[in-house]
Length: 177
Image: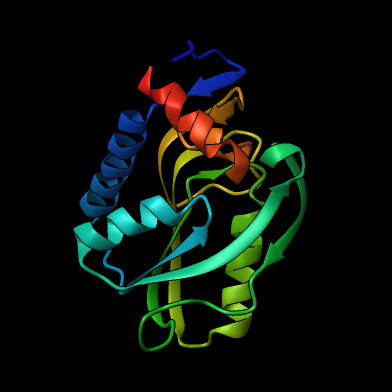
């Protein structure tokens, strides 16, 4: 693992999962009760899964994407999925909107507007992220770490961004060494 600096924050798998649980504790200790979790795919999938298990509430998934170019390192225009995936029922009540981080804040802002416009049964939305960058136009309701220097966050799964099916055997072999 490389050393974190003001420009780069390196996160291990263990640190990532611990951060999710720490964020869950912050939400719990706030006393705010929510009916459903809406996680933003892809970054909010793991936090959403863990929160859904800890709080024993339904998990809904909304796909969003803005980081597509250069193996996910260059932000482009925001795309919001046309539907929300959930196992039963529809989105409504108090919603905890989860993502891994808030960078520019555009995604959180646009998704909250999308929910107000398209989901009248939603009565309240609060947001939660692990990392809140100072450059964001929005402050999340719940966050674990505020990052005043806006570093690039190297998450443990970013190695998969450049991995292609034809490279799998070599990648696995390298891990055995």
